[in-house]
Image 1 (cartoon, rainbow, N blue to C red):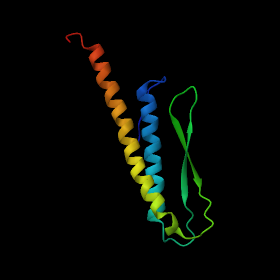
Image 2: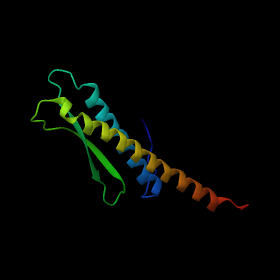
Image 3: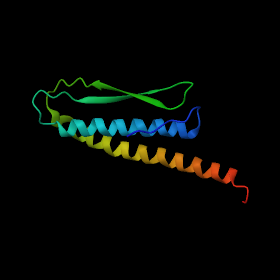
Amino acid sequence: MSLSIPSGTSATATAISGMRAAQRNLDTSAHNVANLQTPGFKRQTAEQMAQPGLGGVSTALRQAPDASGDGFAHLADDLVEQRMSLYSFAANLKTVETEDQMLGTLLDTRA
């Protein structure tokens, strides 16, 4: 997914960075579920960090420390993460849509 982020700290820029983070989380948890039974597979986690001054978040992938060795032990966590990512993406998309609607109203000279 490729989303360009407008410059500045607008609500749209912050929301788009949130959408990217949600997509990264979804990709990571889906990757973990897809490779659950792969011998030697090590889970990944997506770590989000605030971007002070810039607004929004950045995401970094890390290898999860998994002492149990049982991939099924984290299956529920990965499925919940996928659902949370969906809701996060939808909430950030609503922010983009709302700002777009507000700007359209402000710029509408016939209203």
